[in-house]
Amino acid sequence: MKVAIGNDHAGLDLKPAIMEYVASKGHEVINLGPDAAAANDDYPIAGERVGRAIADGTADAGILICGTGVGISIAANKVKGVRACVCSEPATARLTRLHNDANIIAFGARIVGIELAKSIVDAFLDTDFSGEERHSRRIQMLHKIEDGGSNL
Image (cartoon, rainbow, N blue to C red; front, side, top):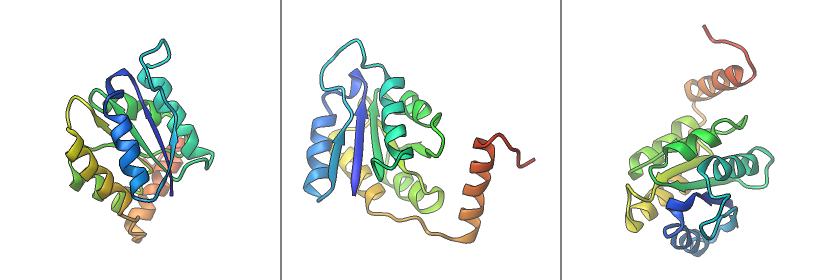
């Protein structure tokens, strides 16, 4: 699996360990930076980069790291076709794949430590979408909203 990883300045210290961990699990890592504090390390840039990598098929899954995971996931979710979820523990990461077919997880370097982050990554990457009708139907409803329609 190709996994795109991006971060802002708050994720600089955690990202290398996560990249190494994902690679050790046999996945191809696509580093969408940044790797050092710079003028372009704002979370909207990283969220969009990873979101576009998912949307255009460059990557199969994405991991985003900022201070809390919130801002960077909001940015990624602005890209059509992205379903990014903030996960601060493995159960949410597993369920967001199983039920929501999430294609990106985000977590906060100021919220989770390295071992918990690895557990979150495992839960996300090791879980497939259930494909159950009710979940597929709801994802189609999300697509309808993205396309400017309504489910009301």
